[in-house]
Length: 213
Ligand code: SF4
Image 1 (cartoon, protein in one colour):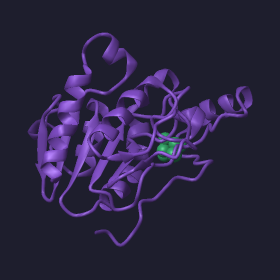
Image 2 (tube, protein in one colour):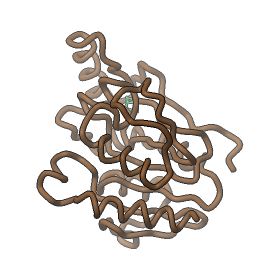
Image 3 (tube, helix red, strand yellow):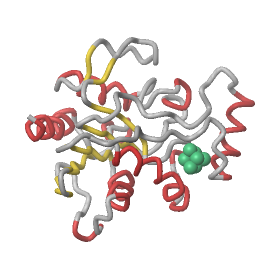
Image 4 (cartoon, protein in one colour):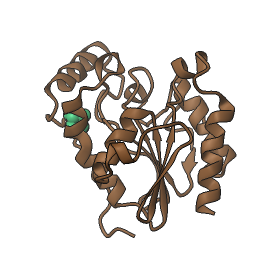
């Protein structure tokens, strides 16, 4: 177990100028929204870390909790509840009382990017926060990467060669005491187009549950 808790960026983290400018636009247009780096959700030293891409504009960027308030959260939290990684009721609000059980959710990029597309330099600039989350994992843990960008950033954070650990839905990649599991991202686009079905998504978390015991 790590001695240090995972680090969180400040609300006004200045490191990515394009994302800072977008954040300021959103603050001016929608002052009631969160409009800041979205902190990770869940207990410290979890056995499961779920890594998404970045906050959704009208989801986590609005509510301030990862995957909360848009379709991706509907599928993710229903799945976590089904496999015992969450407790309570998900109601699309950060004050719905839902808790995570041995699991934590973060994003490869903490600030909402325009068109949901962070640049390579932005992903790299935010990676120290992801590294901090990985360093704070409990022993014999699992990481679920939602989508290729999250997968690639986790691999770089773990010094895994991308060629040796190619992204693929349902793939798993051992990395010492940690195992990286891959899933297509649970976005509305992927589910509407049939790239990802509920059954495919649940199969990944069933694997993780069996792996963790
Ligand atoms: S994406 Fe990460 S590093 Fe960049 S401004 Fe936001 S919190 Fe800071």
